[in-house]
Structure formats: C-alpha cells, structure tokens
Length: 346
Ligand code: SF4
Image (tube, rainbow, N blue to C red; front, side, top):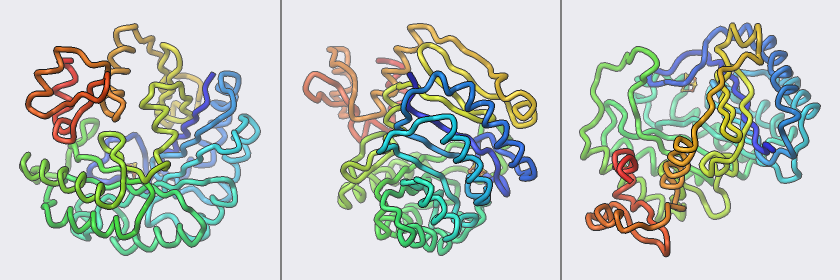
C-alpha cells in the first residue's frame, strides 16, 4: 500500500535561470489542470492506504489562488484518507505567497512550508531570475511564523556562478537567524534539460568545498542534524515525506511529469498538454532487482543510515571519506562531497 502522496503543480510565473524541473509559464490552464488531477487521484485511490505524508510541490504552488487550492483540497479529501498526524507540506515562493494564502493553507491542514529562498543576495537572485528580493524572503518567513507555521524548510543553493564564500556565509547567517526547522542546501548543477543561459562559470572546486564545510560547521553550531547529504533538521523535524523517498518507500505522484514508485514499478506522467488530455497515460518502467538494490544503496548512503560494513570499504575509510558506525559504513562530511564517484565503486 502507498502512504505517501506528491502533487505536482508545474506552473511558474517565469523560469529561473538554473531550473531543470518541468514547469511552464502559461497560467491559464491551472483550472483544467486541477480537474485532470482528480482523474489521477481516482486511479491512485485504490493503491493508497492512510496517507502519512502529502507534499505539494512545483513549479510554484503559490501561484495558485485560494479557490484553486480549495478545489484541490476537496479532491484530495474526497479520494484519500489522511492520518491524524499527516505531514502536509506546500512549497511557497517569496513573491507569489502572501499572508492571505498562508492563513488559508494553515486553516486547511497544511502544517509544513518549504520556502524557496535560494540566496539572500540581490545580485545572485537577479542572476537566478528569481522574482523576489532578499527582504521579500525574510518577510514571507516572518509572515509564515505569524500565520502559525512551526515547521518551515528553507531551500538554499551554493556553488552558483558568481557566488563567493562571503555571500554564501552571509546568506547562511541570515537563514540561521530566522531559525527554520529544516534547511535544504543544494549544490548548483547547470541545467541539463534546457539551454544553460548562465555564461559565467561555477566557482572553483575548492571554493565549493569550502562553502560545504562552512555549511556543515555553521549548521552544526546552530543545532541542526545533518541527516541527508543536502538536508539539515532540528531534532524531530526531519521531513517525513523525504525520509520515505530516501528509504525507498512507495509513493504516488499526481500530475504532469510526476513520478510514482511502488514495488518494482515506476510511472511518470506526461507533460502538460498531453496530461490534460489523458492524465492516466503514463510511461512505465519495470525496475530489475539489480536496479532496485543499487537505488537502495545509493539512497542509504546519502543518509546517515549507511550500508553494512565490508572490508572493501577500507580504501575509502583510510582517507577519511567514510567511517565505520557499528556494523555499518557511512560517509563522513568530507566524503559526502565525493559521494557520487565513490558510490559506483562500492
Ligand atoms: S520557481 Fe522553481 S520550478 Fe519554477 S522555474 Fe524557478 S526553480 Fe523552476
């Protein structure tokens, strides 16, 4: 049975320069899209048990209006049963979200927000083609607290073209001053699904490594637990939704381009126009045992959980990239930076 739901709302007012996700800027189809989501919900309804985590992501979900969210919530309530403590997250953008929508989300059971802050630096935000200013992001965070949200994630990026150690450290200081319960810090990678419009190179490798060290050090000082390669949480505030992904639990993804995974099956929805015509036309992939085992290992190594210790791991333990943790081998912070190349050798 599936206990985890993801809803993809793939609409943005404009495309950020670094974005590799599927989304589009024609907002006129939002209404039709919600109707299509109901067909998707009907399909997944019989495969789902009580839902323990719901994540509404994008795109930019906060470009949806209150009445559109109301229709979406009505569909979800009609089609699924939610556990009493279900973690319900909505991604919000500092420019499109406001007090009004935040209160509405809170009144409708949303108990976790994820704010796409990315940088608290005006020049980098402009280069990233984000719509908001650093002050918009801080104001939205405070508005979310005033609206009663006590579980907030902030997304930040490091290793971005033009970013230096100082601007990154400043962003980090201002973020920790806000004291969110959760911080996701992603290393910038140039888009691979579309043309990279940023001509400037990324910072040198040693600068990026220094940013990562600062990130780990400062967040440890601020009492965050580094529980996944890119994720830090205050005790008890790890993302239940993501823990299910990383534990390779089953999940249903509703929407254009959304991915679902259960058993050895992976389904991916079509892009918008085709999705609106036939929401249930999904591409299906059947994973082999070998693929599943590799995914399990890859995901376990991205978390503190690690994999069962073997003598062959010693070659990565000696240089300090991995360490023994009881009967398991886990990455050290130094090793996490090299993890992609090490994992394929394990
Ligand atoms: S808001 Fe998010 S999904 Fe939309 S373009 Fe920017 S990064 Fe991509």
